[in-house]
Amino acid sequence: VYAKSENVTDLVRRYFLCVVGDSCAIEAGSNFVLPLSEVPKDVLEGDYKYVVALLDEDVGETEKPIVRLCVDFELPTSA
Image (tube, rainbow, N blue to C red):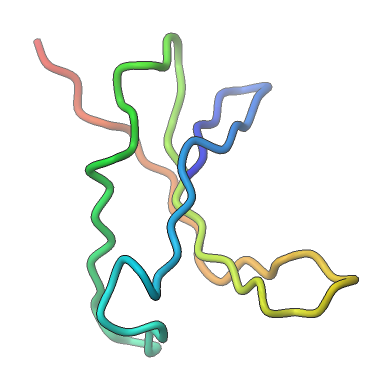
């Protein structure tokens, strides 16, 4: 999970699907739940969005992780 503003992208929290869910694989076309309860929500100030990126890190030592899915979202704010 990343926090992203216009000029900055920072890693906020890292999850491993094998630890978070029951299964390590996500099948195409299937639904899945990724609990984000431990992502700090009150630390960021300014116009930030959160980014959830699912990466395939099993690509060998010389390659960068492959992004399999990336979702930007804003947290609801209380009035």
